[in-house]
Image 1 (cartoon, rainbow, N blue to C red):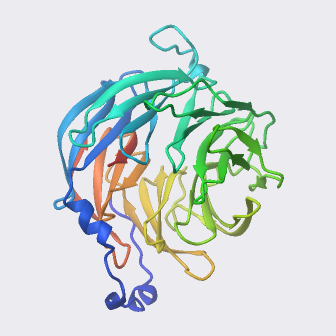
Image 2: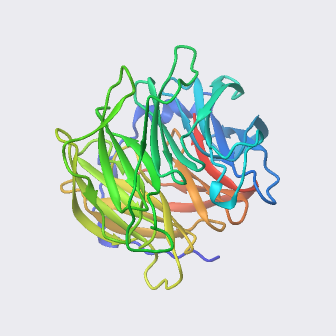
Length: 394
């Protein structure tokens, strides 16, 4: 598929590359052992069996030594602990099709694995119920004491303590949401889709695609208990379907992609009260694109100057520049993802590469990123992998 590409020349012309230095962490990360883990869909005709690992070479932007790191039932999302010693997987069995896991249960689960950062190997630790059939997102708090799960099919949110050995506790908090929004096909019930920790680790922000809500919870780092904040939830545009969410790495802003309307909301973040307020909303698809499109993943790179999101349907990665005064976005580029249905992507530790999991074409592609301009370029040939659903790097 040809790339849809446009640039803001005035923006690029105003950049002073002399004032942009590469963070030392970028260089240091390139010299240490690095691995990529990919959670895959294991249902239907997929030949995948769970979580795959690859050795990652940041100097050349290449993957090698593909290994089935752990057999796992439909690991739809992955998260790695801050110390890089444990990996947690959301096992989504999708009850709406009457599916069951290998033990005959209709409950989804969260699996814990010991991770060896020197070899990239995974060792199974334990598994616990997700509180529903479709856990679609898992996250770890910044101190490595708690795990949070959004279960879409269950319309629920659960929290767990991470025990001293890395195992997960029984659920500490399990909340089920009720209600609906205006899209009868996609919003007849709650559909929790994303759990994101604030930078100060005080709040958990939860996107609900089914209710058009983004709700803030207080988080107790010692007990992993969640309590809804006093402030009202953020009301997204009715029918928009807030899916992915990320905070700016330094400034009081956040960004939420809306799956059903193909838009992204720029939000002001009140870190004292946990309140989100809309600043801007703009489309995610390429200009002139008229087909169906559902954005999925959103990331802000480490310096906080550029934002990237994936478009399923248009099959592009969209790049935006971030105004450093007010957090607003300016479209910078639309580039073909190199496959179909880019469900998830991530930036590698050096921030020089963007790795894309193309669920529809059963491929993983790599785009090279210019650290100064934020622009992406095609790189290498795709890697074959059935049903890639989530990519994480160490």
